[in-house]
Length: 166
Image (cartoon, helix red, strand yellow):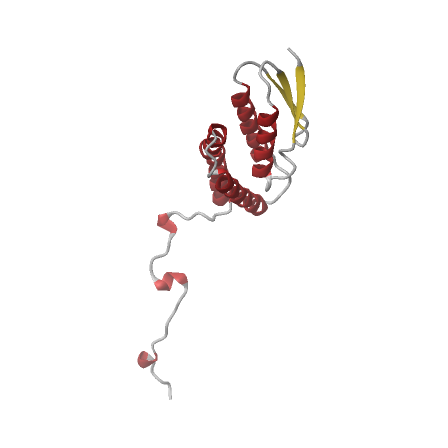
């Protein structure tokens, strides 16, 4: 069994991760040959390498992509929390674009990849988004929401009740 190296671009930056994941998958799938052992290397993720072999190579490649996403989500680049949240939301938008672009394709692999994004990757983003919003106190619990205008600091003076001091 021969060993074929495949280099992935995922990890160049976090915002374009969806495009990189899709391009890596597309390139891998188009160059895939059965009965070949693959060494996958992510050159922008600390030169992460793993080997794929056997009959389930495409699925194993997707699981490798999922692990890379987990690594990138856990990586602390020294950014402030609000910057991480902005990047995360931009990345989710990029995933929405990719999903929209490939949604019309009826090929079983494309539909499987779309399901992979929806079922495996986006839930990770939702969890991380919730953590960032909680850390920044963006999410408010119902018990902390003010219910009357006075609690919001809006004060209206009724001049009819004010007595003049002449």
